[in-house]
Amino acid sequence: MARSTPEVNGGSLADIAFLLLIFFLVTTTMDIDTGITRLLPPEPDPDQMDQQVQVNKRNVLVVLLNRSDLLMVGGEVMDRLALKDKTIEFFTNPNHSIDLPVMEETEVQFPPGSSSLLPADGMWRGEVSKGVISLQNDRSTTYGKYLQVQNELVAAVNELRNDFCRQYFDKDYEDLNTADPVQQEIQDGIRQIYKMNISETEPKDIGGRN
Amino acid sequence: MAKFRTKTGKGLQAINTSSLPDIVFMLLFFFMVATQMRETEVQVRVKVPEATEVKKLEKKSLVSYIYIGRPVSQLVAMYGTEPLIQLNDKLVSEEGVPYESIQDFVLFEREKLPEADKNKMTMSLRIDENISMGKVDDVKKALRRARALIINYSARKEYREQGRRR
Image 1 (tube, chains in turn blue, brown):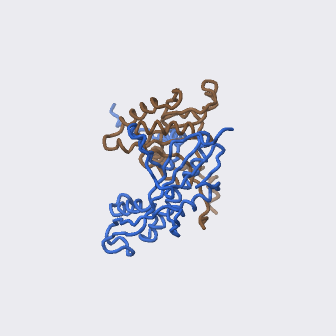
Image 2: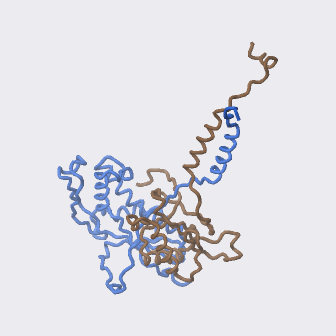
Image 3: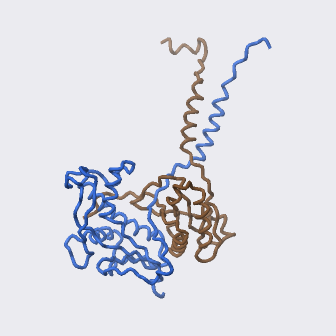
């Protein structure tokens, strides 16, 4: 009892720590969740079911995936890889074709002084497409194929946004920092110019009979 | 020269291991922080498709998971091979469009979130790429009715060579 407190043996500390380490090593899953975020349309009011929104035919691009995973865009069979360019053409209507969507003169407010290509008040004036993509699928379409098509559509819109953002703000659209209110405003502005207008209609059996 | 004669001298000098616990603890803390415990056991086989436009899911606390896939091989005897829906950790047994199960699930998950985040709840759809859209559409329909409108189609990042356009 007269002895001073003996030193604690620290030799097994490493063993204990190793044990814990190995436990966490084994249980760790490093995968980060990634995916394509989309917004579902709210369920229509039962009273307003009949009031179908009337859209001009030229403003709609019908993307159809049938039961055998064949892709049809605007009435013609198409390869998946060509869909992105087709979508970009549809949304920009470069030649002001009367078959492609109406381009509407629009003003979009950007933060003043954020870009040298904009007037001093930050008001962008230009044409915004009224186009809507209607994505339809069959109940037998495989999900993988469906997501690939979704991906191409999203890729097209992202590319348009990115081009705009690079042209005006010398920056990639994805690199906009939404924590910064100015950049958030830029992002909102670009989203108004290039809307993610993809409507997913109620699927029906479009594949026909066998 | 003298270096090689130590053997005959005092014998092997022990390596100082007193800093070993520190190193191990450092590693330990790294893994503790990086670890995400798998809360749910996935009872269906899911191989998510690949896509190029994927984004990271930022706030894990806002995310609930819906799995759709065929049962894993151990459960085939019990459930057969038809695709099943799993909500976080429960398998859905409801026939047809699972309105009720999903309604309950959404309400339950939404209840867990703080008031300010209730409308930011995200449903991560982890769906096997070979499942037919019928099941997926059922789930989407039920989610619309339950007003859980932010969805995320889970996908792996696919890398494609640049400059394909034009």
